[in-house]
Image (cartoon, rainbow, N blue to C red; front, side, top):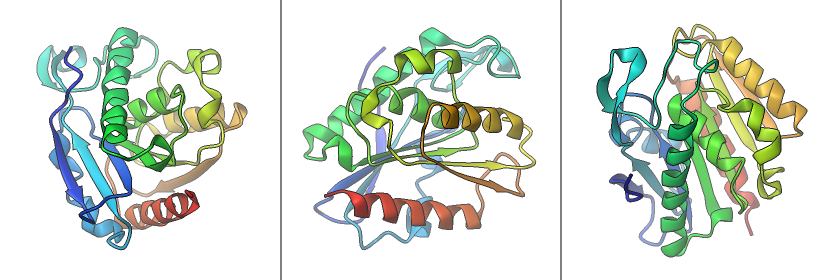
Length: 224
């Protein structure tokens, strides 16, 4: 699998000092969340937003139909039988995106990893194991993958990294209970979770976007 993903990029400055790498959900692509940038109202912070396109692969629960995805899904409950190989390969792709930002002059401590649904799962899969500290993680409408392996595989670098988690109370795709179980497991491991729920399905709402904006402003202001 190639480690160079095509991306959409939107910058708030000609000289970005921070990066937000935003990972889309199953069947979407980088265009899915690009329109959120003006809604976040962070024009005064020099940020490069990176919206990568996941690889195209056949998805088992969708009858083997090829679509953009970070990993395969075998069953609707998401966690009983997971695509561990796919998750770990996608983790390498996300780490390559971080390394590319590093090469362009943005250190990891100035990068926020964000994702929706499968992209949320990849934010946690990668961020908790990363050997360099991130500025923050934004985890939307998703869950913690390979949950039984996190305690053994996590890296101390991001033990104190702020994590924003939000979920829809009527989500039919990733049930709220799945996200709550993930939050409880992360809390038990001592992570700093900012938790929000909203009366919505598997989507994003204006109130949530406002909360994400406040989170980004706060975590990026902390960086020296």
